[in-house]
Image (cartoon, rainbow, N blue to C red; front, side, top):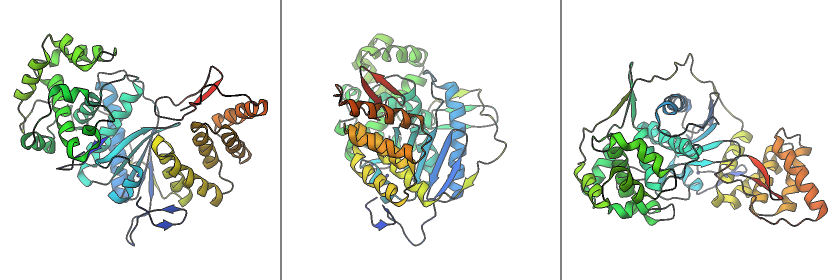
Length: 404
């Protein structure tokens, strides 16, 4: 997640009825555009030039970061980016009031949702892309480290010879100068449910210190040589304090003193890599998607979020009614119902998607599987049939169908 800049810093529509979706718009609103590469699809209501530029930045980041990040590179999937033209649009898709972007893993893709912040868009999108890479690496890192690494790698610059990583983040430096710092023990203990991660009043300090700590561990002379060892230790389920003290043979108090002395300043060390992205022979194609396509993309974005299921279900049902030949909305409704444990309802949606000529093999699998289960009136022993953020493959475990 990416945070807003400034005092309310941080990591998609208080709505009026328009068509089948509630959207905030203005008479001068840009039409939705779609820009695609082989692995990235971006929907944007900010205009085709900004959309095309952002896709090219993400394509370069995909090529470069896979080569230089010190984590397993297992991410070969697709990314769907939704770039909203206003903060008001984004707010209806984000559950965190301090966020200006977020990453959400879904069934067949990873979503990055964000609102247009002009020159900050590149850094914000790369921050969220790093989250996707960490998620697919299969490592369970503490919140401070995931956010610190996302901030650290989002600030890269390229020239004709090399990539530079770790450039200073001006607004983070400003926060560290003017705000009281968190105790290191508190910083290391923050979870996704902590107020420091969810309250706009405290998120700024958490993100700034997480970035500075990751920067110190990765680039400072006293710590950089053991940074890879630290990552190996902490990915073996060690807690942050134990991993830091074991790797660097220093107490938490000594590490905290080193962090305080790692004074924020405009000029900080950067890492140089002799890596260049593959040159692009042409700009990615730009299209103007139909209202049906954009409505479905927005509804699927909601459906990917476990906290937005009711809203997703309403919008998907509206799509299915408006477009009676559409199989995707019914398939997605099947996954939403299955996540909630409503297996009979899920079966009906999957069967209707099949009748509408779905091309999704998982839809056929679950239609047949649930049809058999419901016909035999079997009781599901494990109600967790979610389509959440950790695993995108369908499986059958212990008699329980699970599709995340």
